[in-house]
Image (cartoon, rainbow, N blue to C red; front, side, top):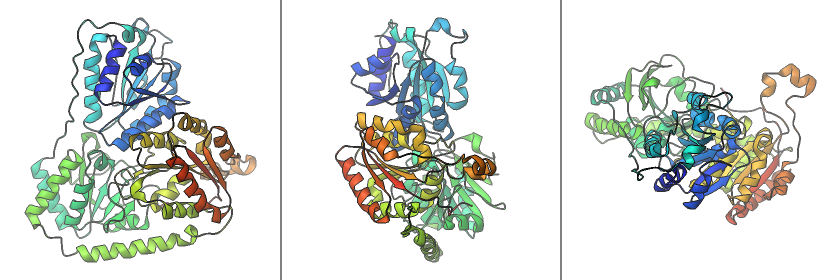
Length: 544
């Protein structure tokens, strides 16, 4: 077998059904011969975004694979891999290379060196006989520890080279580890002594498949649960202890509990400070459970650090809680749930005016409200794009299943949601896959609506067109005033129609619901749909 055939056979053994790409790649023909479907995007970044969304939705059971051609393709691919790296998303990246004799010869692009900063591990496959060993290591790293993209560069001559021995590959298992038992005991003791404990859940809970354990732990502690932006959907957001996400935009309940808690149990999160991280006031004590030792004591001092897989750690915590306090819920549980219910009611009331607005141009919250009225969140995977759609949708949408909402954005690349939603739909074809994006985001990747049409990936895009790049005037007020640098224009439903999608352009409040229902019906018939809502710039957002 050639090196390319060995790569394809290993991917097949790993259960890969499709590989996202922008041709040409030295393994593309070998992939096709094994029955693996190549899905061709209009640009490398969107292909990677598709692989990324696929991986996030599969929660470690499968991984998105993307391959691109040497040189220009690899160079263009940097943004998509950087996005996966900043959000800790496990993607297998297989770029081409012009040949081993050109390694280190300028101006040949050195992917191993250049991608080292945005991959968990990157290497070149040096020979056909080494393919199995490199692929085994790649899948071990994809499955174990902190998630992240892994890169294997494939020289053309390696792809064509015949191996002189049989393929020796077995799929590596996931490696998980639990926390130190004494530390778990100390963590439970600290949390039980707290007057107002709080659980902060990150996406590590999702990748560990630990939503059930998280909910049980919160109930045993009688502690509210806040999620990070990436951790949104780790708990059913209609659970009596769920108080919503905390990022640049957050619910009032999340902000209140971060302010008033005394001990925080952070699990499956790096606790990295940043624009889109939970804003934690000083004076808190921390139990910090993470799978990556580099996170411990980085930005917040951990009173009790717990190093381990989120599901194993939460199981340990629940067992220790049972030892220390028995099976009964704490007496504060009912009054706490009543308090949260009252806060949630006030939160919904706060937004009711905007969510029921009859103004034109449309209020984006009215569009979101109509969507939430029509769509059962248990049957959907929903995501935002960067900017206003993120900050408006993230706190008001209620997700009820793990990965029913794809929160993302440590790197805020406009347009990520389109490819990510296509990948999510391929991972969960039974779900309605929906992305809310703005007109600026569409300008970045809009031509890949044709990819959804051509590849028969029936997603629903909710395009909120306010003819502006929201929030940019905060940074360039003078330039915006003089030259209109935040202003945009375009009839995007006509663009999407020209690319073959089902479209509607909505300008009146009464048209919102029927358009959404028509768009959903189109996706059920196997056709991608784009609904363009002509909205106002809505300055009111839950940013704090």
